Image (cartoon, rainbow, N blue to C red; front, side):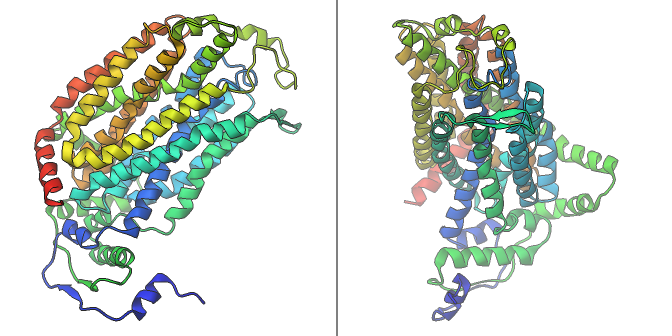
Length: 543
């Protein structure tokens, strides 16, 4: 039999032990584990989970133009359907944040990934607008458990000096994973096969399979997390010191491969925060009363909106709302708008603004209602494929995200979070406003791509949130802030859905101005100057 890693390590010559007689801080213990394969595996899984969340929520944007006839969708209904997953996320974010802070990060992430996949599979078999809306709502409801909690889970396997880099590393994996979205959409949606399912009274077309494929990363990540433990910082805050030490030893063995001195860590220095929250956490874990559970949820949430945390919570929530308003709200119609521009160009129109192209290519839904949507031959106004330019520019956008996250991860400690936020908000906001005036379609599309890159700020703001709040409030703070972010997605998608066909220019004005305002608000993030100075010292000392 092939020996496993632990058996190989045990057979290696025993180096001199590194024994720590005195208790050490958990942050120091995490630094002792070095940085290696264990951390990289966690970063990869976390990044893939983030990509899974994006596929589950934004993958629908590729479905809307080609499912228009099958589901009889108006532009307003497209806006509702594109936002409904985020509505599910909003409705459950508070619950998952509370459970993550009281029952465990992994305890929340693991089952919600499997439930989200099940809901996604069901949504691929729906036959009308209301059925797919309900199933997509539940997809968002469950995927919310991992979308916010994963930041706290990943960050708590690292010391504070490395948590921002780990989060940005996961964001890079997320960016690389997102590159697959337009590639998968192109390879699946643009096929020409279809199967009739008489029992369900539907024609199973490629867009339905695409929905299932978007849910597969959730299933894969759920299986992968079966082999990883709960967050060590969470376990330590619950008083499980020995279990925490075992995780630290395991991390050290994985990262060193048995080549370094054997770590003999015997105890950890108890932190004030852990002592203060231990009793309340134990009461919550044992609570079976619904009213008592709701009361404890309030007790877990209230501190975020009181005292020193009120300003922090408000700013973080407003920033996330503004980012998601554009990055997700405007993205939902990105493939659809590009498809409309391509349609107009095929008709010989050379110079036009994005909004003029939108006005000229509106579809009259009443034509569709007179046709059998399950028939093989669909009306000429129906699109069963997306123009290749929609995939090409989406691929470019995701590539920019992947490279951008890599660059931000490398410079965030040296440059600081504030300059990054101000630059991205300002550049993207101005680009959004300029789109209204540009009558060269290709140039306007590139400015549209730049506008959507404001999503870079999501991870940077999350990194700020992890720094601003203690362990017992961190997951809740991230969940609450992202809940406001998802609310921004709902508002943004519905604004576009309601205004696109009549006041297209106004949608870009709203996005551009809101991003510029977020850039100004970034200056007021508490301790951001102090944090930048600290990160500079860390960066210099690590050279």
